[in-house]
Length: 155
Image 1: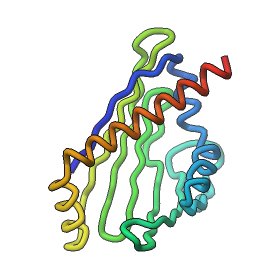
Image 2: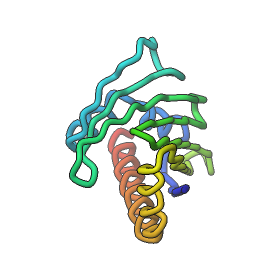
Image 3: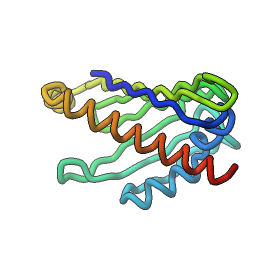
Image 4: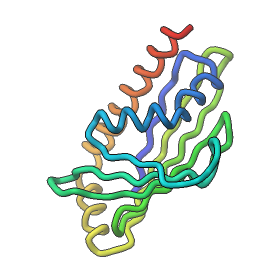
């Protein structure tokens, strides 16, 4: 199953990528939302191989996920691979400069179940695909607006 969203941000490509790849800030935001996040790699700087161990509550149960930055191509692309139980998730973030002051951010997440219970979870998501798609796009729109507002304040 795949979820996609695309948002345009009124800011230059390099500034948008810099904000999206500010992993320390993203970690702090996740912690504020109740997600346990711990960096578990020894990569110096930013690049492929960065890893995080996370813990979160989903459907009333504590879950763990290991997230790896598998591709890092500034300022156009980041690819994250996540594994949680029998479910693998690949998230691709692509950025395209529409003009000197406008950037399009496209996010695509693909769920790949590897176990029966993961297949059941993905099947239930497919049955509610309309609602899941809408929530995903609304969440992306909110994140894009917050990012645009932050970049405008910094300018």
